[in-house]
Amino acid sequence: MEKDILQEDAQIIVIILIAILVLLVMAGALILFFFFSRKKISNAELEKATLALAYQKELLHTTIETQEKERKRIAQDLHDAISSKLNVVSLSTNVLIDGQIEQEEEKETLHRILDITTNTLESSRRLAHNLLPPILENFGLQAAIEELCDEFSSSKKVTVSYDISYQDSLSKNDELHLFRILQELLNNSVRHGKASSVDLTITDTDVLSLHYVDNGTGFDINLVGKNKGIGLKNIESRVEILEGSIDYHSTPGQGAEFNISITHS
Amino acid sequence: MDFIKGFGYVATFLLLVNAILYIKILPRQGKVFTFFTIYLIGVLIIQVLNNVLGPVLHLPNLFLSNIYLVFQFIMLSLLYQKLLNFKPILVIGGLVVFLLMLQYSNNPELLTKYNVIGLSSTQAILTIYCIAYLFTTVNQKDPDLLVVNIGLLLYLVSSTLIFASGNLVFNLNIPKESYLLLLKLNAVLYLIFQILILIEWRKIYYKKMLKSSS
Image 1 (cartoon, rainbow over the protein chains, first blue to last red):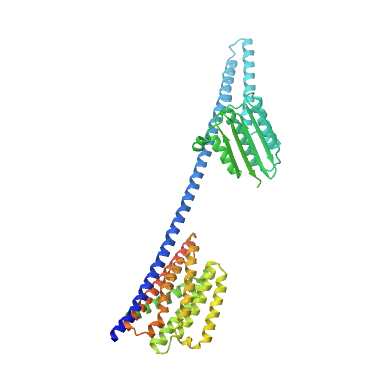
Image 2: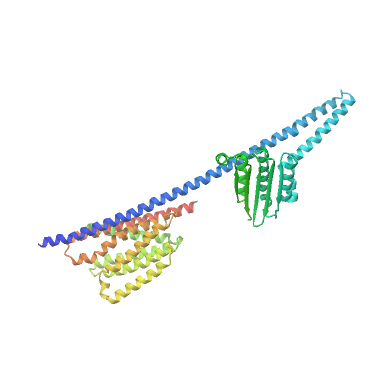
C-alpha cells in the first residue's frame, strides 16, 4: 500500500520532468526560429548590397565606355579636321621651299595654304567649343543652352523652340551636367530620332524641372529598358549625380518626351 | 548525491570564473555589462553562502532563495530595461517588488520558506523580457549579450517549473531519488547557462582584441 502511494507521488516528478522537457523544446524552437529569421534577413540584406554593387559596376562601366567613345571622337575630329589639313599645308610649304614652280602657281599655293589654315583654325575653335563651350563659363547656363538650341536650329535640320527661366540654382559643376544632358538629348533627337522639331521648357522655382519633347521616330521603352544605349545611360547617370529624377515616354513613330526634376540642395 | 554536488560545484566555480572575467572587461563596456556583472557577483555570493550555510554549517539556508529571487528580478529588470530601451520595465519592476514586499510583510514566515509564487512569477516576467529581446534583435547585426540571453531563456523556462515544484515535493511523500532527478536537471541547466556566459565573454574579448589590433 505504502509502495503504491510512493509510486503515485513519484508520478508527479515524471509529469514535472515532461513539462520541463516540453518547455525546453518550445524555447529551443523559438531560438531556432530566431536564428533562421536572422539568417534570412541577413541574406536579404546581402542580396540588396550585391544588387547595389552590380548597379555601381554598371555605372562605372558606362562611364568608362562613354569616356572611351568621347576620346575616339576627339581623336577622329583631330585627325580629320586638323592633322590631315596641316599635312596638306606642310606638303604645300615644301613645294614652295623647293622653289621650282611658276610665280602664279606659287601664289595659288599660298592662297590654298591660307584657306586651309583659316579652315583649320575654325575647326579647332569648333572642336574646343564642343568640348567645353566658353559661353557656359562666361555667361552661365541659360545663355549656353540658348546658344546650343540656336546652333541646332541654324543647322536647318531641326527647329528648337525653347522657354527657359533659370535662376542660377545649380553649382558650376551641376550646370555642366545639365548642359551635357541637353546636348545628349538634342544629339539623340537629331541623329537617332530624325526629329524636325524640339520643344524645351525649363522652369526653376522650388524644383528645377526640364521638359523636353521631340517629334522624331521615338523608341520602344520596353526594348530600351533591357538594352539602353550609352547616350541614355549617360543621361541617367548624370541625373543621378544631380540627385534628380528622370522619366521618359515614347512610342515608335510618335516622338519622345523627357521630364527631369532636380531638387535644390 | 555526489553527482549533483559535483555539477553544483563545477557550476559555482564557473560562476566565479565568469564573475572575474566580466569584472576584468567591465571598464570598457557600457551600463548593460555593469548590471550583468553585478548580477553575476550577487548570485555568486548567494551561491557560496548557500553552500556554506547548508551543507557545511548545517544551518537553514532556504531564506537565501528569497534574497535570490528579489535580487535576480531587480538586476535583470534593470539589464533588460537597458537592452530593450523600454521604460515601462522599470514601472513593472517597481510594482512587482512592491507586491513582493507586501507579500512578505503579510506573511513574514515566508521569509524562511520557499516563495513559490514569487519565484515563478518573477521568472515568468523575466522570460518574457528574454523573448522580447530575442525578437527585437532579429535584424541587428551584433547585439549585446545575445548568447547570455539565450542561456537565460533556457534556464528560466526550465528552472521556473523546478522551483515551482519545490514545496510540492517537500509536502508529498516522494522518494528522495526522484526529487534528486529534478535537482540534477537544474544543476545541468545551470552549468549550461554558465558555459554560455563564458562563450559570450569569449566573443566580447576577441572582438575587443580585434578592435585594438586593427
